[in-house]
Length: 266
Image (cartoon, rainbow, N blue to C red):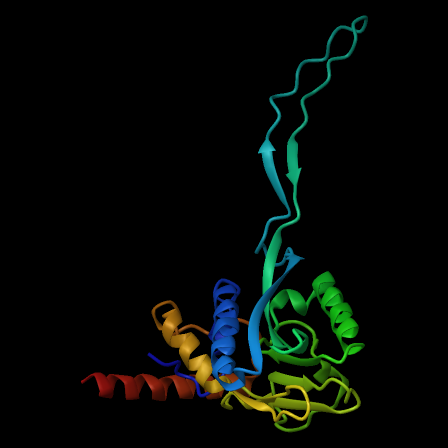
């Protein structure tokens, strides 16, 4: 069953769903591109290890391993004091593997394009700082960078934060493309909750032409295979902040979708 929305489904931004959505997007983007770039190029999924953010109780920062017994009575003055048993905690840094896509030129083995799908940890706190550092490091190389941000939460993090985007005025999501060797030029695909996802140009190595990433097709496959229609309660508001205009559009759109779905099932 397809998503009720023409573009990004804001309900998928829920922290409980996003890790699955993120992994699926990476897999299906690679699948979408692979047939278009063979045999000169190969799309490969890579992973880096990051420390997960402690955010809204998503991952606990401490784990109580053992509580102390009741405090003992104070010993007589002349005797050595008895030490009380402490509570024992295990402190840990939660690691998670973050997938991304590399497009590799088969003849040379060199990475020509890196595709990132941002997660909440890339847009808040220390995780954002780490991402921005990796972003800056990559911009010093000839590798093209494609950033896909389908999240309203957090601070602007893609390279699109450096430009003033006016159309559409209510954009919430963005895809940015920075081409290796052309860092003074940035291509952006901004879109709102109402808009379909863009079909984006993915750069290869000159003189080879760009290939098209059909994000609407990728998202449809992600939603269908993920079975999110069986998980999401569309009678409730989506996570995160929406303007009154956006909420009004969302309610009327979902109502029309429910009516159309009931007529179809009859």
